Length: 316
Image (cartoon, rainbow, N blue to C red; front, side):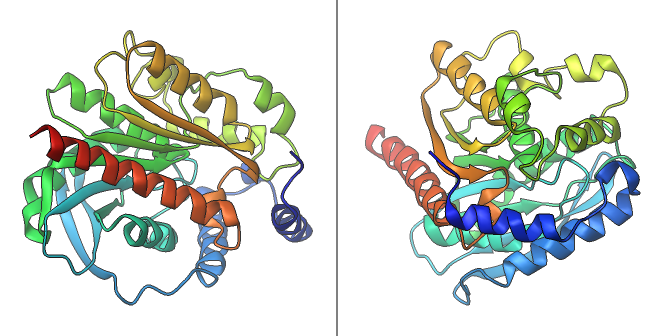
């Protein structure tokens, strides 16, 4: 279908700002611009006074890093979901994704734990991956503090965060750590992917192919890193036995095809997959509250979370 009119208007407004290309900026300059844009979007999000928030620090292999815990008022034990923010590995942080994580918490009722992993280029691969897995282990060990069920544990993330969620799910399987599901919002799954969607939408749809190349240069040390399944989860030798997956892609997104190809590969390996392409939208759409599809995908993800935990309860 054609671009959603709200998406077209948003793209027109962003393009009119005439922001300099990422490759001409320092990481700190790029981060400042991203945080400012996310803050403006957050101001459009519904208010969520009924969501409680706590901040904590986790001791990891590269020093302490922050997490933020979001939870509602609940008596019964609820699922717990560890969320890894996007931003091309380099740009995002807990604060700039606050409204996104609040939205998923509100839709699902789960305890959400947002992870402030150390970012490249200061901390290159595999440092953020190691911290993402450390955060998952911490969530499982501490879930009861917020009356959450560590046996109903999920990972989630968007874009680069979707990459971390997919990689963390693979690492969890290899370490015999049970997950109920992985929620991948338009994930980056292959750092070397050449796809039709990158050719079609890699220019003129806000996320540019040049941007993705810059992100890769910031994140990875060598070509061997790009080939590693811990950077490119689609390159894993086997996907069999992984946790059920929710994969959301955007119609006008250069990452669309690799997300959908990963969903098919999971399915072909016997993994239960719920995959849907959200029409008329671009990369990053879950961060834009005025897009109808942003609310829809959160409701869909919430149904996935609650359905997986209800299935476990029924089986028991």
